[in-house]
Length: 311
Image (cartoon, rainbow, N blue to C red; front, side):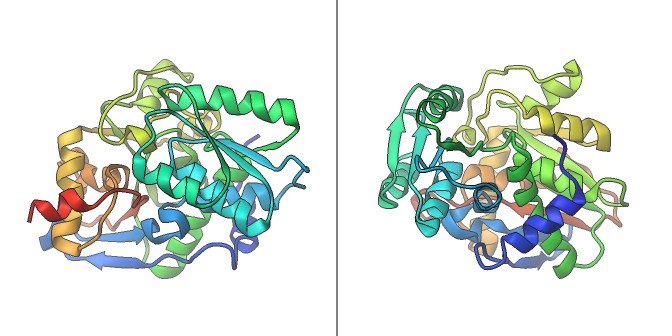
């Protein structure tokens, strides 16, 4: 099932009062080498864009007595837990044993049931699907779901309201839920969407080359948030239909950009949150002089002590 601009517009209305309208700040060329608008989605509830999709999925369907089940590297789990607590429904979150301590601590803080299984997100996903089938819970997939992607696309609705005409949007990609929503909103417009992936987790680039989703080996500094082993089939269709290109950035560039966001703007973000901007700061994406670029800063769930210690 493909999503539409109408579905995204409806999601934006449905989410009113449940999620924050996050700010957009304009950054001068002297900071990162090109003038850029930053959509500060790391200031969303739970520290990432993920509550948009979680709430939209859960508000669009009756919640069964068993509640909701989700699998996550961390951020999606936090979003589903937050939505479940605020909607007063039961939730169980499956995460890999490699999930970050910061995210685990926050998950337990919501009082939902947390189950750790396997070494990667794919392991947690398989276990969560089995649980949802066994107990009759609503599955809230992290990215390969039309309701979730429509919710994430509400970011683009806000971008349209808060900035001048945007010619390019840089979007970090793991499983592709955020990209699917953003690319759908800007389809058949003058705005280009560029996918930015860690070189150690190139799910979209590999799938575009093959013509279908392909399992990839996942590692690197952003793997806890951008560590899906395979791109969403829904997102792949959207990317192929709308001409989205993938740009790869290495771990060093991601971490240098993360540090620069702190040094220059005092924004503490996780590696995934710095990935899209790393395409610009590293030169992996070369903009034209007249491009008006927006970058989605997508996550903040990190221990910032290493940022401060380097000063």
